[in-house]
Image (tube, one colour):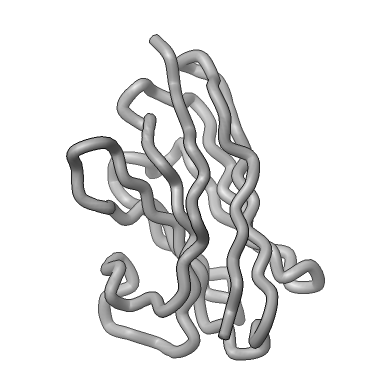
Amino acid sequence: QVQLVESGGGLVQAGGSLRLSCTASGRTGSTYRMGWFRQAPGKEREFVATIRWSDTNTYYADSVKGRFAASRDNAKNTVYLQMNSLKPEDTAVYYCAHASFPRPLYNSPASYGYWGPGTQVTVSS
């Protein structure tokens, strides 16, 4: 079992920045990759970013590429999502996700076995 807790969400004006954190506990030795997803009201959960634990290789959704950056602190079992140049369309609940082994589709929620409860990010115009 892996437990995930996100933090760092909040209200920010357009153009501002936030940094989300997600700390894992439990069987963290099995981490293959960690991902960030988001879900806006009335929409499906969508992929934002992912980072492979062994070599910090990252992938991003086109909508956030160049604005968001994922990183991790192995010693703290924590993954971060630095979000810059935020836009109102970035408003959503952001979820951290954990994958214990490789799956073909890193951008699919089905590839992750554990999820955090989410943290709200609201960007005002």
